[in-house]
Image (cartoon, rainbow over the protein chains, first blue to last red):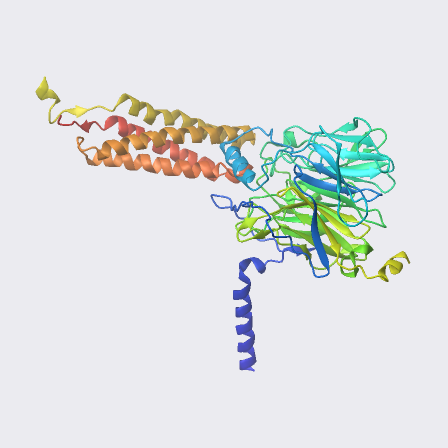
Length: 440
Length: 143
């Protein structure tokens, strides 16, 4: 009796010792641990130290292989797989014109810049084509250029929508086209003053009548004043014909990628949450975006947990805040979201791939990988599974994933904005009988 | 005349040293008032003003401290307790003002109330350091 108890205590102690403090915190799922807010005199920072890939490659699960299908791009962000299999890549680097308001801004700009590529943003869309379907994208063309930090991209019928950092624009698209036939038409301007979080994410409604645009906040937690947050930190619903827009959901600090769930047509987003509250706060998240819902920013996080760094504080907004669906862990910086397809194989058929750009506001770096969040009955279920890792080794960072896109033919396309590469992950041997099974 | 400069002659503060020492005072006062304005209006621009004023004052205090330290280690200048005290107060001002700058680098209300309290302390210390600096006439050099 006593011996068993002692054994249990000993095992418990050993487990605690082995885990270290960070792993005791449940960081993912629908009910993450939310530790006390903490911030020392200096924020915790570990900035990525970039290095070339050399002979290294990102690591994928057994049964998969990864190849670079385009290199030397100019800051690739999001990708789109067209019906004919061509891939469009948006390239650009926005923001940069944010006014220096405090001495801190000078330092932050310098330090965060060290962890990113020094290449100038392309402000263009590159098209990649695999002519003979052998997995080698031998053709490359510039589909459109002279854009303004394009990020989100979506195709509706014969119209290609692109979310620049200051406007939603539209090109006509014919299958097989490798270059836009004319200059873009502006559907509607988007909030662009300051553009602290400049990335404009984009998804089209299943019927093609609306476009959803994710617009990030102009600050961490309103420290530039709330006047500059008008029209920020929300998802807009834009009428594709008229360009008229309305707020679809608000309080989303930085909704960096949007996607429509196949089958039921529900809109989902990944959101980057606030910094400087500690290494395990506040969780970034994946959530279905409910029409009219307020997700808390800047007054609260993960539902009704108040963040009193905001003044004037609004208690009634805390009460209104809804909880997101699924925590991805703090400081992961999810920037890509794509629902899977049966062609990705049984293990990864039902769920969503998420590109995690990686942390800065944390001593131990996290993120820097692509994960798969399994779904059951249309909801996230279970722990995220590593899908692509190996972006960091020996204290160096070789790549940082941004946009992820599932090619329904059975591939995951990943944009890497540090090494300026587009990666393609495929199954090594797609089993022959699976094809007929998928058609059932 | 020569004997008046000799031995017991007292040297007044160097004009440049005086400027460095005194310049931090209005800047720290401005930071204190800006912090007070932010805490009563919640307008973040006041906090931005405070951050810059503290940064500017730190440069002057740092230079004044350097000047005082060099004077202290000069072989031809005598060291007395008043000089030591004035340097220590100046050093404390610098350290607290630096901490205050870090506090002011936090976002929004996270700076408060620590920022305002530190701004008051730092201003009082800077006032004291300036007082000491100006009133402590150093023992003159034997040249």
